[in-house]
Every structure is written in C-alpha cells, then in structure tokens.
Image (cartoon, rainbow, N blue to C red; front, side, top):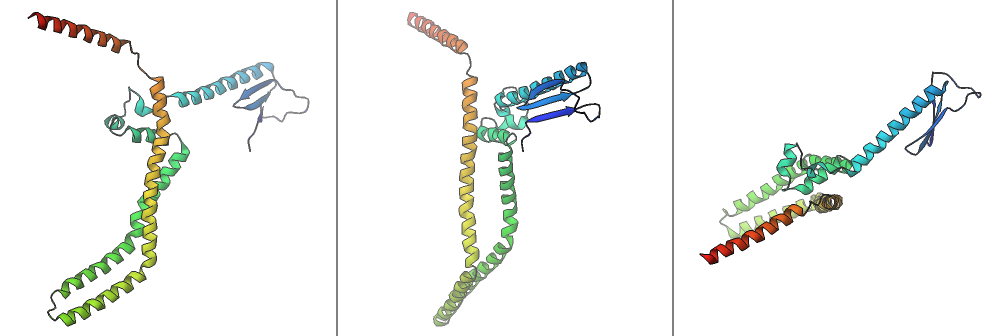
Length: 237
C-alpha cells in the first residue's frame, strides 16, 4: 500500500478537532501535513522537511547520472584498475550488480546453484565412476584369456551386465543431460544479460565524455608542419 499523505503530530499530544494545520510540504510524491502548537515551530519543521526532500532527490539524481566506478579516471580500487581494459564488461556489470537488487538476487541464485553443484552430483559420480572403472578392468582382464571361445562368452556376459547397469541409471543420465543443457543456456543468457545491461552504460559514457578535439587537431597540424619541414630539409641535402 502506498501512503500518499502523512500527518505529523508533535509534542507527544493527541490533537483535537480544534487544532489546525500549520504547514504543508510535498515530499517524494507524498503530502506531508504538520500540526503543531506554534507557527514558528511549524515553519522550522516545514523547512527541515523540504531540505531533507531536496537532499534525497538530489542524491537519487546523482546516482542516476554518476559515471560508474570502472569508467572513472581517478579510481582508487586496485582490483578494478588492474582488470580495466582486460574485462571492462565484467567490471561494469559487477558495478551494476551492486546497484540493482534484481541483478544481485540473480547472482546470488547462480552462486548457490554452482556452489551446490559438485556436492549434489558427488554421490552419483562416485557411484558411476566405480562402475565404469570395474567394466574397464574386466575388459583389460579379458585380453589375458587365451581361450577365444571362453573370452567371447565372458565378453558377452560383461556387455549384458553393462547394459543392465545403463538401464538402471537411465533416470540419472536423463537428469544429468538436462542439467548440462540448462547450464549451457544459463551461461549463454548470463552473457547476454551482461551485454544488454552494460551496453547502454558505455554508450552513455561515450556520449557524455567525448574529449575536446582541440588538442588532437593542434597535434595533427603540428605533425603536418613537421612532415613538411622534414621533407624540405631532406630534399635540400
């Protein structure tokens, strides 16, 4: 529920019907009424509320127009300085994660998923690795059997056992395939999210921070004059 009007009572007293409004202020789309005993106190309180509202609005505006930390030239954060230019996409995205709760929530969910992935799969992977290791060992053992008829019978027996095992773990294999497929999608769309989140930011930076061309133009003219002078002296000698 959004409260559009706020009434402030002072002096710790319940105000009766004969009391009257001494001040009105509008703060963040809400109407604030001040009911007080004296006009002087009302005006002071009203002034304080207006100053506070202006400070909050100004702070929000500064946050919206501020240059993200990874794009600041006077940054003091060594870790960002070190990676800036190598992975500026990641740096800007990390900066936005700290500012947008929905991105932070997603990153927390992804961390929970990837941190829990090894433990969740560990039991099955150990089980599956032992079974596969056994079948590899039996195949190696079969190579030592000289009787070809006996060796073929044993190989058929082992193959039958392996097929039974694969049927036993079929549900696990299906779920593992789904996990792997979803991981690919998660990683792909995570990259998409990083790009669509940061692209408007770098474009805004490019638009608002284009350097003055004067110094570059002066240098280009100087290079032109220097080239002409060099050619002139080279032809003279």
